[in-house]
Length: 262
Image (cartoon, rainbow, N blue to C red; front, side, top):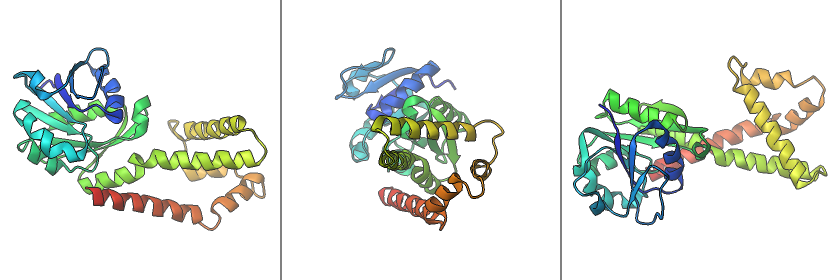
């Protein structure tokens, strides 16, 4: 089946970021959002479901707040074409809840992260038990337009993706912020400190992501001479495993909160 006709319910910050990449695939997109003034070129924008007439859609994308699900989604159950599926990016809303509101329709639930806005996202994808192979493949292809896709077998694993990748940009930004602040305390201007820190992080990550790159421990050791400056810095950073323990606690806290919100 070709999933060419797609309706997107809601188009906030994350939905809009993804839509810009989704639209590179050639499908036809209709956005239903009363708060939106304009849509990306090539997409149709309507204010409410009544404006859709009797049109049916191959994919219904759920991009509204979870508290709106029970009120808004049932109206779209009859709009899903035979063989179609639901793609949800509604955070904290289970596939089962979405399926219930959509009269038992197949549901693919996705947890994207913020770098999807620049095509460098990492998204977790869970396909419910009613999702067919062609539906799952299409959903995965859609998400790959915005970055990397990690497919998981259950929603508990999706909550763990949320802890690692969904919330992950926040951890990276905070680490970078602290790194820049420390560089400023070494006497550098805010501009120079930011340039040095972000450039160093970007360069190191580029090396780690090269095809055939060694593991992270080997890369770390390759710039660490015995008794040198890097060794001294690393001993202060994680010599007693404080950083390693902190990262474990960080991910566990985010995972537990994701479970609470499920």
